Length: 335
Image 1 (tube, rainbow, N blue to C red):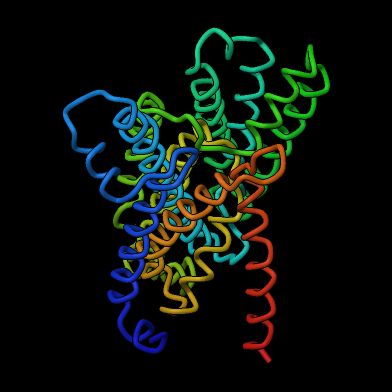
Image 2: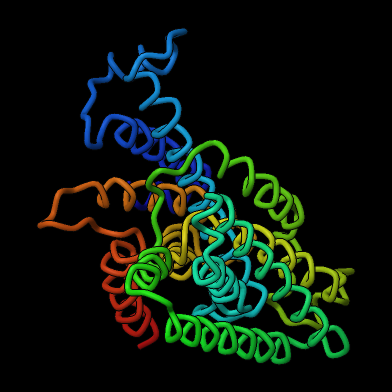
């Protein structure tokens, strides 16, 4: 089966889509109130506003859609950045957007505006992510080399992380500090269509910017000079991916919190099936990212002790062993 998927990349996409559909259905059925398939479909398509319909349409459906969009964003941008930077360890956090969005969220909680409006945290997070993108473009615009881009991203990320620590250090109460920590751990709980309407347009704009970059990434894998000789505008390609990543990942983090490892691990998983050609990794990485995020969100609903698993913790538990396994497999293949 694995050999067939390796020979037929489209078969891998179909298999991932089927798995994603099943995971989305399971996500709709599983929660504090467990539903049968019949109850779920009746509540989804019923015209009434009874309690079951509200649970499915107002809580679980936007959670499923947002989780799939967030996972697809992280998987796609991870594959794109690894191809752009020619670095298998690259992920969306490398350009500083993830940390900056987290900084904006804790500032909103610290200032108390989160208590005034539920939209304050995602709005602040998205605003800080956009400011980080603007600063990144200013720092790296004169020298568009990959090294400058990476160094600028590391600088922005370090500054944002320091800002988060500073704000948490001056938290007015243990309750606000707990809110900051819980948000940073990531969650899709209680997300509604308002969150989807807020983040969705920025996510889609980011996707649109990155559509069609696969051919350029394939050429870039041969070197920047070779890509330019083939007619690829390397600078334009770089900024399309960076800006698309910043918009889509910033919007994702603004409503889901900081969720790691998807952008790092998923492209490696896909690469094991269809090879190292960057352009071919993009679509299956997006689908696999959506699948992994959906499965991780289901695991957060498991009753464990007196607390609740957070999405970022689940992804760290899943992603870290997977990444260590990938490293060992890579070392074995290089011998």
